[in-house]
Amino acid sequence: MKKQCKPRWLIKSGIICWILVPLFLSVTADAQPIADPQDHVARSFIAAVFNGNYKQAWDLFDPEAQKATPLEQFSPIARKIDSVAKGFGFGQEIMEFMRGFRTYQTGQSIWVYTYKFKGDVSKGMLPSALIDVAFKDRQTTLVYGIVPKFPALSQSQPTSNYISTSSGKEITLEKEQQWLVDNKTINVNELALILDNTTALFAIKVWDEEAKGITQQRAKEKAIPIVKYAIANGYLPKAEAGASQAKRKLSEGIGVAFIQPGTHGGYRIIIAPADIKN
Image 1 (tube, one colour):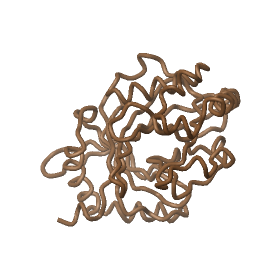
Image 2 (cartoon, one colour):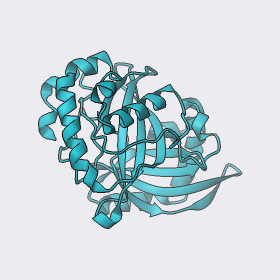
Image 3 (cartoon, helix red, strand yellow):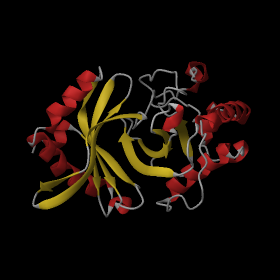
Image 4 (cartoon, rainbow, N blue to C red):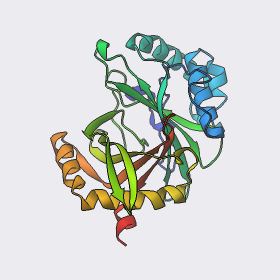
């Protein structure tokens, strides 16, 4: 995979490395309710590549991405990855859908959509694989798809230009429980560490009825008390111990994922230390 990410594929601002996502999983039309236009485009892109409609998938890219990765380069890589990955035994169902954003010094926001698919553990695969698809701000043309951080497929090491909101590998710290936060019951789905090659993000996944329609500001307002509760009740040392055992450095921020019951769709946000000082 390293050879596919050449220096000329990097945006001058050093933000993004254009990487073809190995879309080896099909998406059925009714697998997940359409959350917003970007989600619809992302799913269409995944389905098009898996079904061999490479031109249709490529047409969904931003013009800059098309220039960086012409169709004649996109198609053979997609075809090769598709043929190799079909033997990995992944199901077609989207188990979970999340969206989040990153803002950079340039003022540009990148919206990242993550789709989790169930793997066939009988074949020695991880329980699930994650695919990230991203957009500039609220545009509906793709800026990149990311190879899921999955040992059997991804052999490249992330660089400083490599954006990802998930690693494809998670360590569960604790399972379902209830927290009483500001006199409100919070149904925690899971406490986990999301790993990349060098760091571990402490993530709190909670069930939330308004997750699919939640705004950035509302998500932050709801996440901060949850993070404060986790810290006050001794969960951070557990995360630090887990990160140390995994030989990773614990990230300063803490992630909160709001998951819509029944659909597994939702919204995620990372709360920085500065956000919880007050």
